Image 1: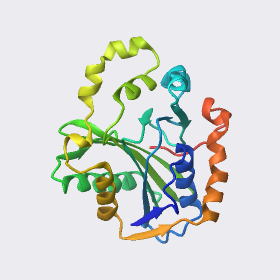
Image 2 (image 1 turned 45 degrees about the horizontal axis):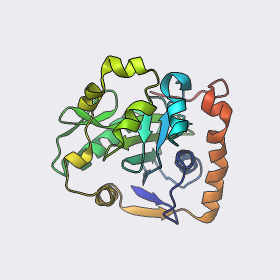
Image 3 (image 1 turned 180 degrees about the vertical axis):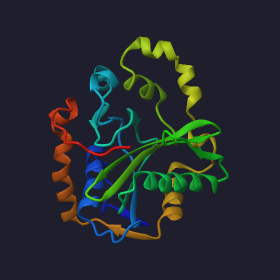
Length: 248
């Protein structure tokens, strides 16, 4: 698998990395069924919600604005996710039209990577990765131009208060399920390994990839052009302007 890299270590907005996935699928030279690309990324505090979700029902917009938390819509399905510099985001782009085959291959790769660290990682039908029955990774999919894109989280660590509040607008919803109940359903990778987050990233790349492709400045400019579609307020706040995309 090809490890896709950027020419600098600059941290960009989440919208850039979503556009980078699209660019990889549309432009970069993947040859043959099953060939794939992979990259890891981190962002400042951000909420990302699914293409079919109503933002007001999923994102605590006032809380996010008060605490400087960005929010973006993605083009894949699935639920609302909080990300920050303390966890790792993963993107997988492959030359394949087979949704279930793609998801199965990706989940096996992620679980296998964790299992080789001695962790009892398993996957669910909801495309989550669990350690000892608690969620450590959630993943979503979409299909574009004969390519499949899977992206997900790896909860290495996180700001738990932001995670619980930024994506849970009504206070009664938080009260109903209970903060402790939410915490009991998830786990953090740092609780199961002595690796630092940087060591884990290096391990993941070493384990999953055998080639590297660094993007050029021209690639970056083209990605930034695609990124504008994710920054359009009509896209972020309302789904009427979205074109149909295949989801599982």
